Structure formats: C-alpha cells, structure tokens
Amino acid sequence: MVPWQLNGADLAAVATEWPECQQASPQALVDRPADPLLVYCRTTLDPEPWRATGWTVHQLGRPGK
Image 1: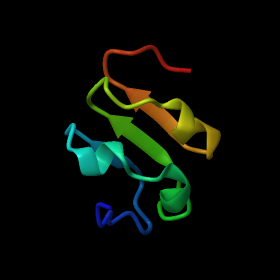
Image 2: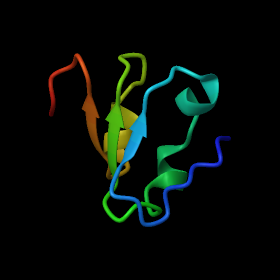
Image 3: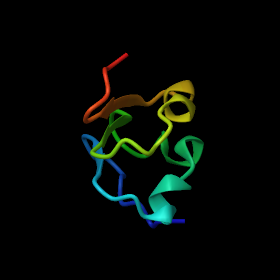
C-alpha cells in the first residue's frame, strides 16, 4: 500500500502506473481528502471502483462521466 498523503488535500493526482497505485483501495482513501477528486494521468486504472466509493475521477485521454 502506498502511504498516500491525502489528509485535507484538494485532490489526488497520480501520474504513474506503479503497481502500488493500481492496487490502492479507493474505499480506504475516500475520507482523507477534503473533496475526493482523483486526477489520473494514465489510462490503465479502472475508474469505476473509485466512482462507486464516492470519488470524482478525471482521466487524461478518456471522456469524463
């Protein structure tokens, strides 16, 4: 697990395909930032588990929902 430093953050930006980021638990992280917003700069992450737990997800190269 990545030691995500999100407490009070405005957003989480991930620009890597590291396995630690791919395997991060959206449920475990959703209450840490002020607003659960994930900006993902790759296209390998499945955004649906993140959205299902309350995150807003923006992925570069993919249409927003």
